[in-house]
Amino acid sequence: MVALSLITLATLLGTALANPVPVPSFDVEIPAANASEVDKRQAAEGVYLLNCGPPSNPNTYHPVVHCPDISNCGRIPSNNNLCYGPTKWETSTGSCRFPTGVTFTWNIVANAQEFPYFAVVGSGNNGRPRPFTIRKDNQGVLYRDSQGYDCRAIYVAV
Image (cartoon, rainbow, N blue to C red; front, side, top):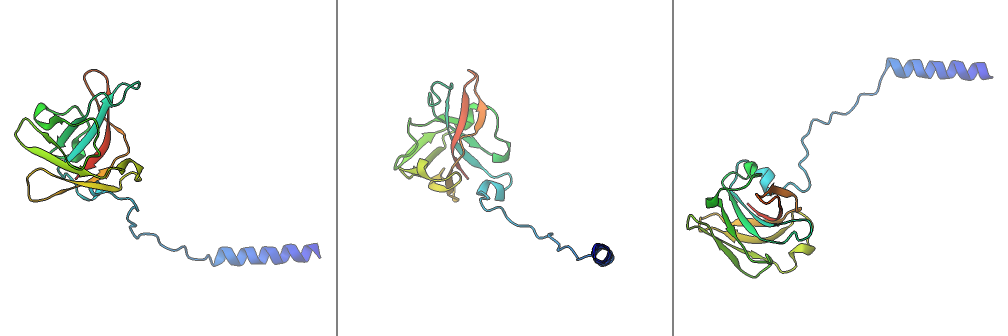
């Protein structure tokens, strides 16, 4: 009886190897569930609202950084692309004037920090026809300033 079972098993195995089941193709590109507008728009203009400071006080100061090409914005910005915001980003209306004379204004909902990362939490404008969509960022370090302070992305506008 054991010999019969081994013969049956060997026959089944031989049949399976001779006639493999085709593997389905997964060539279809599936978009990421949380693909941000930054991912969708290569080399897009953007603005970061940051909190900078040492680990003991990560909210020492609050720069607003304009990025002509947001995909290349991970370093200390030039003076023309930097201005300073309020101590709290979640205001009905906030603004910051860059040395170039351009003013960036924003509206961020009061409870924006309760939203998940990359959720839309507001809007912004710099006087150009296209408004910005503001998303809650994941507080990753965008750059380290000249004092050695980490500057973390609280919101990103694209």
